[in-house]
Image (spheres, rainbow, N blue to C red):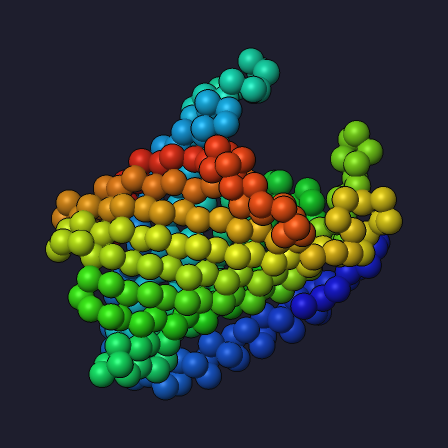
Length: 291
């Protein structure tokens, strides 16, 4: 992680250092598996038409991913999010039409079954994502990269019930410590994030499944300016995103999902706001096609 305290700086050498050690960690973890002779192509397209309850707007939130499975438990891929606006009652007419907006892209490495105990139904996996400023919005706020490092411990209680506890440690690098809006409002960029998630997976039938996650995010903001909102502080975010899926075939899944946009608590956890958070959510229809 590179702490940033104002001004532009040359982050290229530090960026290379972070990438180097991320690669070393991936290679070390991969050394415990046997490499296959042939790569297997992997990929999916996830389309999510969404209704925003608070504004009445309609969007789509989508992800495409292409990559290769190197071994049975090891894969590498590139994932790209892209959203479109279908109807936004709050936007001026000139900007209310269909708009394509990219999210930061990511190179993802996954290693399943780093350790497992079949008798106890336990397994440990690792995932690394290196995010890239593909989108204009990220570049405008000085985003360089974020390195997500997930450790996931799963416990299978039966063929129906599985619990997964994961922790994501995320150094974030920007070219500057904050930004000032055209209205003169100063806001610091994030420099570090930790994401803890507890997910309950229920396999109700061979084709019907439910996912019930609870997520707790902690973000450290940079020391930008004394008048910046949340300057040099920690902020917290608590949310959920339940989803029910039906596997139409081996390569096609349909589902319904929901997630709250506003946190269940305010940014310093001093006050709950469950009603406000639930009202701020998005309902989504899910269509996932995979290779």
